[in-house]
Length: 258
Image 1 (cartoon, rainbow, N blue to C red):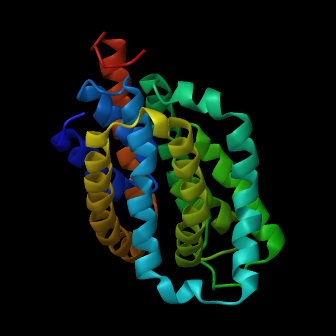
Image 2 (cartoon, rainbow, N blue to C red):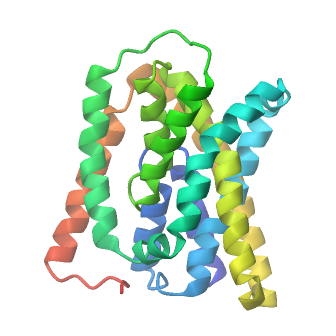
């Protein structure tokens, strides 16, 4: 992987991580078009540059992380389902990361779900997030283990279906990303640290720095856009992109996939 390929993937990660359009799906698509999706380092890189995105949440919402211990217990409860299921299905999830067909179908179906949710969900007043609500959102997050689904979309939808406002659901999704993505990135790093070359460290650092800056801008845009316009635009975008991908794959267009 070249530095420029790393920067492109980091920009894609920063833009898409907190939008309901699937950062993993977009990085699989981008790496496939660049011909590097089959590389083991690419798989590790796409997970570990999420540290940069995590840092953007900590910087933007640092005051919110100095709350009562109740806040951390609820995050932990919401994090547990993904931690357990992700650990048990790690190899299966890794295999899916190479399949653009899965991404295309997930993008398409997820687009229809977003449009449907946008029509039936009323933006309610903010409410206290209870432990049962946190746990339910945690199980919704597990759906995003399928590439193309979107962790952000699944957790925000889970929050809204449990009575949270769009903004409150989105912000809780951002907070939940911190332990979830830190655990996923840390686990992947532990599994692959012995394969990392000296030159790879520079690539990882640059990738995380770019992802951090871009993610900060994306979060500010998303909160404002979501509270005003909802999910419709993101739903249509997913449907169009999913159809384009399915069309390319069906026509025999060669992507860097296994």
